[in-house]
Image 1 (cartoon, rainbow, N blue to C red):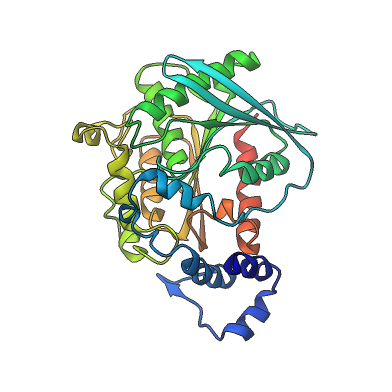
Image 2 (image 1 turned 90 degrees about the vertical axis):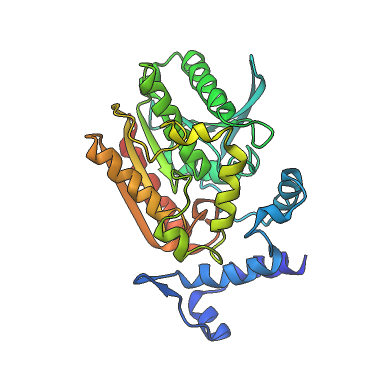
Length: 338
């Protein structure tokens, strides 16, 4: 409780005062300077969440989920009232929950189907509720957040099956073609968005309008330079990523499947894509590599890089730099909608 109370006070302290109070030098890696407020936050967060660098130290995935639910809310309040509606879908795989976010003013006919992050093991509708209220308010668009089945209880392609079912349900529910629906997700959710688009392209199914992949996980090898440079100490660790992929993978055959392993070119046309990367993120290089792969294949792709931020920043808009970057990327994302 002491750490949580201190963090609440911390968010209100001006950056110049933080520098005077802490006497910390800025962290510079690969000619990138970590946002100072984020830097101090990471130090405080390590006091509360020591051990999350290696999820395998926990007895079970459920123990990690319960631990993570105790974390401090880090998202700013939306700038306008957001109505939420909870839907329950019945599929052959069981019941699926979807939360709809409906702002007062809607400026786009293109709804967004959102997939939360958490390495396919953590997270859900509630973990991203505050962030998506912020998204809906900023963009003036309906957002539908899917509570897909988690690993390791549900291996690949369980989450993909849920995502595809939700996409087709949303098309029927709104009486819109899938080609007018955009996909978005952060981290594992970014992978799920791209995985779903690739799956539909390979199977000659109608493609979504666009996809926004926010610091997506794409490479199960976890051996990029950024994975090594930021292997620990920046919220997401290399050990955690290796563990997450292991929980998701059903068999080693998945490594040769372009729907699972996004480093493999599917040789298919994919939706226009916006990819977001952060400088102090183990996933930075693989996000950039995926943007390059799409571009080389002739797909329409735009990448925005925020060199001063860390993985997870869209869920941390209580931090000033994270809020500014999130507002900036959402402004660009609106150009990928109708």
